[in-house]
Image (cartoon, rainbow, N blue to C red):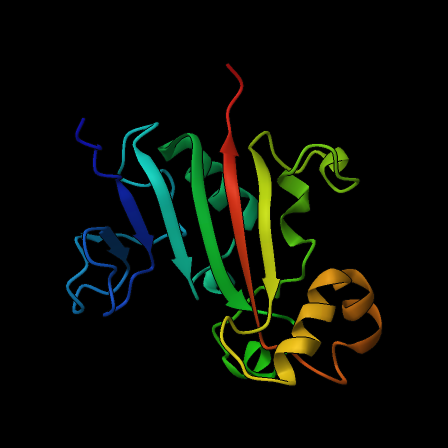
Length: 181
C-alpha cells in the first residue's frame, strides 16, 4: 500500500524552504509559495489541512503567540505535529535582534497543554500535547553533550539557576495537536 504524502507547512520559511513543503512568509522576494503576514488572521488555509508544521526561528517575531497557536491548531489535522525551533531566553541572540518580541522557556507552551498548571489559566482553547523539548543545539561534542543531557533532564532547575551562567542559546519543541472529537 502506498503511503500518502504528508502536507507540511513551513511557517516563516525564509529563503531555505523545506523541500516538498508549502512555504509561507511575509517577504515576497524569497520564493515562498504563499506570501502572508503571520500576524494577520486567519491564515489563508482551510481547516484541518496540514499533517505537520515547522516553525524555525519565526515564533519570536510574532505578536500574539496564543492567537498564532490557535490558528495553527485550526489549520492542522488532529494529531498533527508542530515543530518549533527558536532562541532560548538565555541566549544573547534572543535579545540582540530588535525584531524579537518574545522569549521562550521550557514551559512557554504549557499554557496550551492540558494537565499543566499553566494550562489552567485558560489563555486559549487550543490544546497540544508535549512530545519533546530540547534545550541546546542538536549536535555537539563531548563534554558539551554531557552537560546538555543534564540540562535536559532538569530544564526548570537549569532555567531558574544556571541559564545565564551557561546559556544554551536555542530551544526546540515537538508538540502534537489535540482536537476534541
